[in-house]
Image 1 (cartoon, rainbow, N blue to C red):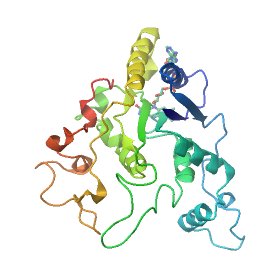
Image 2: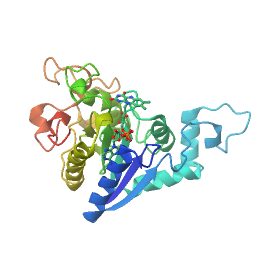
Image 3: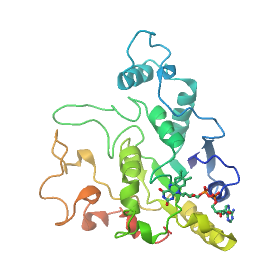
Image 4: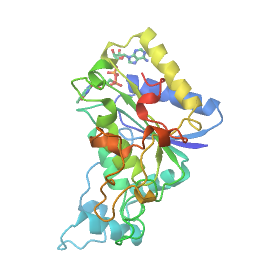
Length: 278
Ligand code: FAD
């Protein structure tokens, strides 16, 4: 299997870098081929601006969506973006690894998504009509591939539990897991999250590393999160609202977009069910 790790931490001696090394070592030991996009080391340009669209004339207004579509269609995306798209097409599994900064990914990684997930590649794919709303959420360019997050968080696990003050970790990561990864077609595995990282020592590191090794060993067999498919009949088109008869009574918010437990048993997984997430 080909695995791409997109890594966002500025310090090569960080805890995140040590965990990345653990993941790479375990994957390679299992015979997988791994590429790492180390965004800080690559000095990744994170902002979308005119420089991304060299074919745009200086007096033309920049419309980022239209410019992205034109650049993808005409094969005029910049070389750094094209290289990352090639890596995504090469990889059977994508891993995004980052420290949780202000409850989400660092800006450099968000900027990688903004620029690499181009129109026609990651969004704006498929037929848009009164019967279909494009190929997304379970369909799309990256269908058949898997994706997963490796996250370090300074806060305690309890702070991210269902009643924790920070909000449940699955809610905080929903915009990434569902909005960025499931959207263009990835099957999304439950995230690996390690907590209280600012208190790490050798013993805690070894415990976290062992869980991560296990997640890498089971990358091909771990059941994905049971998100509903957009075009599977669960949603009204074009309002894209979940049909009234679906969803467990009392469920609201992000959790509505998970299949009910009975369906989830058919080869899917709810994020909270994975014991290995510590
Ligand atoms: P490092 O800082 O590199 O290391 C953390 C600890 O692990 C250190 O004590 C270090 O000595 C030890 N360590 C490193 N490598 C090893 C090793 N190989 N073996 C043993 N010990 C090791 N946290 C939240 O929970 N929520 C937030 O919203 C949030 N926002 C943040 C915003 C910013 C801008 C910043 C800077 C931090 C934020 N944090 C937040 C905390 C952040 O998530 C943690 O600092 C981060 O996850 C730690 O990962 P790291 O790779 O940077 O660790």
